[in-house]
Length: 279
Image (tube, rainbow, N blue to C red; front, side, top):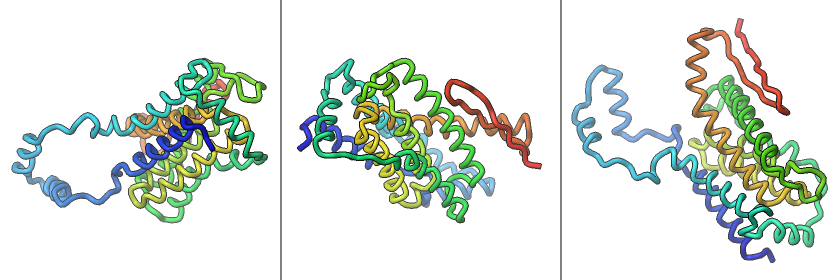
């Protein structure tokens, strides 16, 4: 039986992920009002009555704003992770969960090395198979490269700053988990591209990411707090990539036209870039 604190964290995390997956997507069907507005603007007519009603409508609550909904889950996960670390140790969840895992589980596998990238590969595979996402295959690949770069940069920097010892005591780069952050970054990409088509795409992606984090704990490579922080960093990385990509795309089109794209990269402290030119 898991300690009460650990059970609370697991249940809370599952609830947060379900809420995250159920967020409305841009692929969701438009309402009749929104569809009529779009058609009216395309025909050059100004829908004055609807605009007047929109101006008089009350502003949405803070909790309903997109920025809040994008950050609440990673912010909560990161807060719980910090409170659970050995240096803070408010929740006392790391050692408790590790003892329970040692008592009931013995796992030796390298599945987590491949599983962390499965959601991103699934997104690209769906696009290649003709299933329409928010972006075409090329843009999905570029978004994956950008989110991967941001994720590597954030995770590497946090590891260097925090210097948390791993459970086995073999190094001081435990916080946050790199595997978990990569997995949740990929899962968020799949969610943003195809979550509007079906909730099960999001559920599948985040299940693979959660399994990756669970394997890291079961193999005694990471603490629970490392995995929770990795999940937060991964989600934020992809959200930042989707926020920055439209601006980057506009700048590249101005400077290079439609024939070239630059993909930034960051790995093991080295920054670089890849240029893709369409001849």
